[in-house]
Image 1 (cartoon, one colour):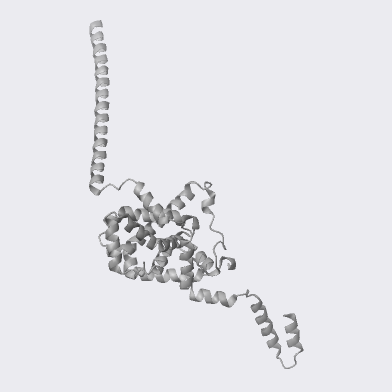
Image 2 (spheres, rainbow over the protein chains, first blue to last red):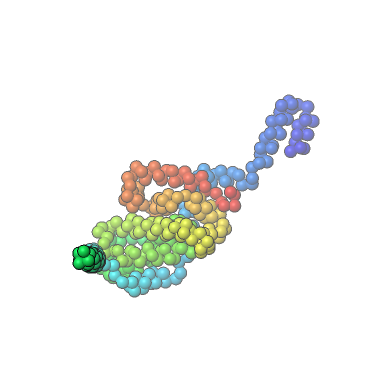
Length: 135
Length: 182
């Protein structure tokens, strides 16, 4: 670049401001990395169908041989999907078991609470009888 | 499968729905390359291609009897593929949140240059910058799905698909450069 500036300065036909413009252009051009035009075109056009095709081919190459056979075998070994009716009955059954468990627990805690209350009343009654007898 | 007529495909699907394993196998062989490509475009990971493609086809076999219209098979299959990939990406994201130091290898993106050409590398890099939904959109278009079919797959309107597709293409173009150049 220095050489071109020197050349333009030494060129008697060039106006002084042209030296600066030339220098500015040279400096700006030096900022562009190699393959600039290719990059611009690539961004402008986006990926072409060939790139997508390559992507698919590359992905397909990742599948090991006998892929279909393995899938069919794996699907065969898995248990069947329950039907909607089966799922409904399963949900109803689960809800029923939960309801029974909750009501059983509730009844059990109620019974325990009653027994505790009765025991307390009994204790109070005994204390009252004792106090009456003492008086 | 592109060369197969719609009627032949519908017949094949009907046979597969009845549990004919040969027909199921034929469907898998016909679509495995396209599904693998879709999975790779969605995840950007070569090591997921086989597993996720297998999951897609197993789901296909197990749910095939619920497909009402055999003519809609292709868009139905790619909907399964999209949902499988989105689920996988979500699981991966959750795992990263809850196990930030676990399975570190999962978070390492495939190295640049791992694939064979500059164009493919650039496309892979550009896809990785997009949201999974946008990747799915672009991959579905590449699969030849119409706007109406994509709208059906994504449960949205055709106008929304067009708008999103326009934005996704713009983003892809912006990022379409080799990772070495960034």
